[in-house]
Length: 334
Length: 252
Ligand SMILES: [Fe+2]
Ligand SMILES: [Fe+2]
Ligand SMILES: [Fe+2]
Image 1: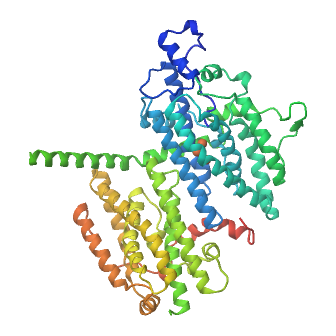
Image 2 (image 1 turned 60 degrees about the horizontal axis):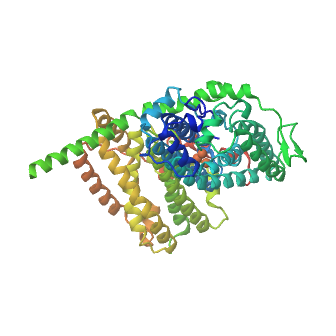
Image 3 (image 1 turned 135 degrees about the vertical axis):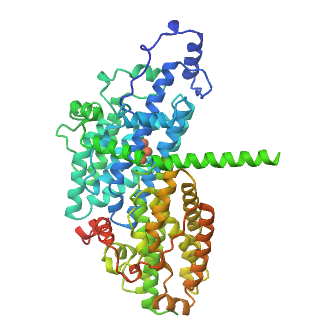
C-alpha cells in the first residue's frame, strides 16, 4: 500500500452518543455510502487524516518514478523503453490526480511538497529499495503495482468523493502496469540462464519489501479503527497482505521462481498460505529514513525541485507579465 | 527509385535523430522542475521512441539484411549512428534541454511536412503520422522558450547561454551531402535549402518576439550525419546498449 503509516487524527472512534448532531449526520452519510464532497461539512480530524493519507499516496507515486526511472535509459529494446516510459509517465499522472484530490481539502501542492522535501511527510517504504537488474522492473510491476492494486481497488469505494474518483482512474492504469510487469518477468524467467538468475535475484530482494507495503501487522496498527469507520480504509493490513500472498504464490510457481521464505506453506485448514514473520525492525528503519536508498531518493527529489526553481519562477513571472499586459490593453481600450 | 545505400543512410539519420533526442528527454524522467514537465518530457520521449521504431524498422527493411529496428538501435557503434551532434548534447539545465528541443523541432516539423509528399509511400506514411506529434513538440518548445526568455532575469540569462551554446550545432542540419542529393533527385526528400528557409523564418520570428539575441556564429560544428560524433555519444550508447551488449542473443 502506498499510504502505509497514516496516523489518524481524533481520539479514537466515537460512539453515536458521543457525537454531536453534525458528526452524527456525517457518519450517517458514510454508513449509507453517500460520498463526502469538498464543500460538505466534515470533522477536522477526517480532513487532516485524509490529507495525510492522500499526500502519502501522491508522494509515493512521485518518488516511485525514481527506482523505475533508473532503468529507462538502459531498457533493452525500443518497445520495453516505450512501455517503461509510459508507465513512469502514468505514475507521475497519478501523483498529479492525487495532489489535486488533496488540494480539494484546502492544502496546496507546494505545501505538501515542502513536507516531502523536509522529510516530514512519508512515502511508501518500497521505493527506498534499489533497482539493481533489469528484472527488477518486472518485479516492481508485478509485485509492487500488484500490492498497490490490492489496496487501491477497495479504496475506489472510499468515502471521500475526489479520492474515490482518483482511485478509479488510477486502478485501471495500475492493473495494466501489473500485467506488463508480469510479462517482463515472464520473459526473464523463461529466458537464458543469466536472465533466470536476474529474475530470481529480483524476487529475492522484492518479496519481503512488497509484503511490507501493506503496513504494520493488525495488532500494531493503531489507527485503523477510526479510518475504517470513516471508510478511508476498507480492509485491514493483514487481510490485504494475505490476499496478496495467496494471489502471488501460484504466479511465482508458474514462473518457476522461488519465494524467499522457508516458512511459506499452504494451510489446508485456512485455505490460505502461511508465511514467515516479517522483519518489522527493517520496516520501521526504512520508514524513518534509514532504508538503502532513502537519502538518494529524497535527495533526487529535492535536487529536482531546487534546480527547477528558476524555471517555475520564470513561468510565474511570465504569466504575471502577460496578465498585466492584458489588463493594460483593456484599460487603454476602455 | 532511390539508391538503396543512400536510402538506408537517410532513414538511419531520421531514426537516429529521433532515438537520441528521445533518449535524452527520457533521462529527465523523475527529475524535471515540475510534475507537469515530468509528464510532458516522458510524453515527448515516447513520441520519439515510437517514431524511431518506424524509421529504423523501415531502414532495416530497405537494407534487406534482416536487421530489425532494435538491432540498429542497440548493436551499432557510435560511428554508425547518423544523428545530428545537436541531439546528443547533454541535457544541461532545463534551458538547454528546451533550446535543444526547439532548434531541432523547428527543423523536424518542416522536414516531416515535406516528407508527407515523398515519392516513397512508406516514408510518406511515417511522416503523416509523425507530423502531428512534431507540431505539438514545436508549439511546446517554442512557447516555453519564449516564456523563459520573457520570465525573470535569470531565466533570460539561462536561455541566452543555452542558445549561444547550442547554436553552432544547428548548421549541420542543413548541410546537404551526397545522401541528401540522392534523396532530392529521387523525390524522396526535400531540398535542405527549403527547410533552411523555413527554419530561418521561424528563428527570425522567434528572436523578434523573445528579445533574445540571435548568435552571429559563422562556424558550425558538423560530423554527426556521417558518424563523427562528440564524446558524449559513446557514453550515451554505453548506457543505452548495456543489456543487449552484455547478454547477446537474449530476448527481452
Ligand atoms: Fe501509480
Ligand atoms: Fe500507485
Ligand atoms: Fe503503477
